[in-house]
Length: 591
Image (cartoon, rainbow, N blue to C red):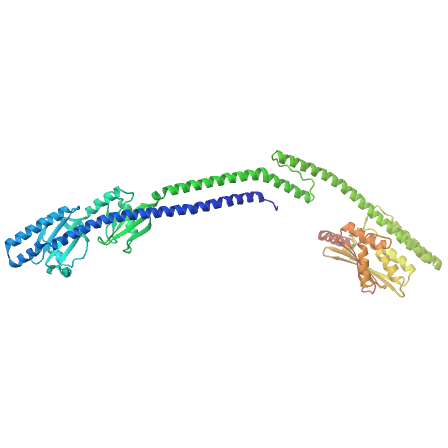
């Protein structure tokens, strides 16, 4: 059905077309908002991390400066001189002075720390916490800058960071030969305390991280989350700042890192994406729920429209198509709204009136058709009678009494057949016998006339309109042979092919040219006039009235030398099969 679902589908397409730009715009603005939030959080986080890292590095720089201050102190020169001169009092005096200065500098630092002054030559140490001389410290080269390792503070080993100043600096690879080594160290818990303070003032959970080592976390940090994040960070370039998205089993995180050259570690902070974008995600969820609700309401409305409007329209269209196909008995049983109820009632009334009107018209058409057939048949009878009486008159004048008697007998049989008007159709076999009687009459008048008849047995039982073949044979005799000198021949042949039956009449008369044949076929398709011969025209009209417009009469040059006329009409394969079986049964019975 051409209109099936068209309105409903168009409504769905319209809804999608209206909602799609809204969804696309929202996705775009949501992406822009999320990107803006990411950028703002990134700038804010990096600002906080840089500020915090600057505080840490300021303290580290301050402690490094303490070691340089001790190294430049004049007392260091006095201590070295007293060691060379073996002046015990001067040495004690210098050691006491340096010890006081070390304790003063250590106490001025904001972090818990220790400061040790090593004299590798004499294997002596000046310490702020009473640490003993560590011979193993000078077995390997000392790394520059702050180094993360365990050290002793007040007799306890603990993780932390140490810084070594060596004099002279070139002896870093062999510190055992150096003049002195100043060691400054602080425990990791100092950084942990700063991380606690930093975390208390912000939303993140900062930690220090270096690939291959344990992170330094605040006391309240989530150990599992930090472990998952550091396990997925791996090695990173030593850039000033770095941002990375991490997806773990516990969720997705935005990780921000800043590299500290003094510590050789990253200061990192992370935020769960769910908490950062919760408002965006909530608004997105609300929007999608609203769109889904709107779409659902639209679909429900479309379905209601389809049920109460389009379905009745489709029912009406289907009924009209049934009416177009000729089914005037079809009635609409569907119930709809008040408007469609009215339309359905009007349609049913119209169909009933059309059915009644068409039945009357069809009956009138059948009666008219029967009258036309009888009229055409009655036109043939006088035509043949006129020709036959002329023949009898001619035979009487010639004095051929036997021929006249035979002709009158055959003519009586002939008209006995033609006057049986109660039967409109006759078998091909009866028509053939009727034509044989006619040709016998003509042979009595023209002894030079001969004829041959060949009709298949399975075709003999087929029914055709009465007196259909005789006018064709009469035209062949009168117009083709009668005015021609010499012997005349008429051949009548039947053919039964795939779906068609043919009766072919050929003569050896003078025939017609191609132009005359075309003109004759054209006259068969025009209404009957005084100039048009009624015989052939009647035969053509009767064939078409009985078997349809594809039936009719056609002309062709005869192989005998004259004119060939073909009568053609359709026959179904089933009818042909039934006739063939009937012929076989009749033949067996005759045998």
